Length: 138
Image (cartoon, rainbow, N blue to C red):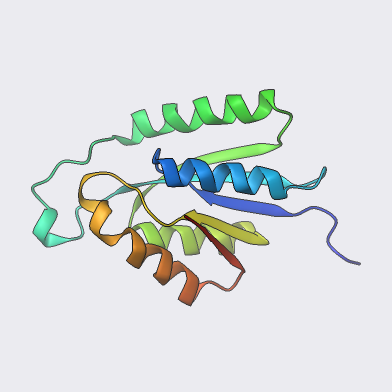
């Protein structure tokens, strides 16, 4: 039997491009679809940046995600959200697989501090390695 409900995973980082990605994902949703909002807080796995503290903690990230979820629910969007610590691309790929999403939506530019230089690389990593379709929003 064909799948009736679709799940859109949106990689969210508070940037303008991730907000555009979120808006695009909402626009693509069908009535029974569900949106999965994922915010990744970087861990200090990149040794060059180990001394740079992240500009958001897990707790504050969850508050940001919860605020976005509230806005989505007020719009009538079925949405879930989660915050993970780790590598951006790895967490996006892992969660998309675990959730069985039918589309990954990611912004091309954005992220804060350290992530700015690598966001194109993150989108590219996700695109190249994803087992699901990826929509990159500029």
